[in-house]
Length: 119
Image (cartoon, rainbow, N blue to C red; front, side, top):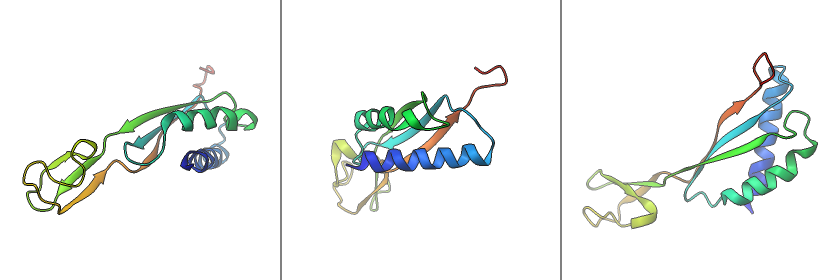
């Protein structure tokens, strides 16, 4: 289960940033998760809700998940295509000389904190 380790990493990273920047409260954290990363977004949010309850800066913070489409590039024709739809074989030239360009990563994209009025 990658989701547990991923959530722990996100929590540790955000807590460290909060300490370094004197931030008391986080409203939400937005992450991008690759379509073929092996991370299941619903598991990620379920574990998040459980894990942040006792966190100083993150208690009550929402985890927003955006999915990044998987894109593969062909080494022969240079075109890109949807990985999930076509897998390893390029739909344009039928080459197997392809590699995953995006779609297996996860990125902490945004951390929202209250403004001066606490909102």
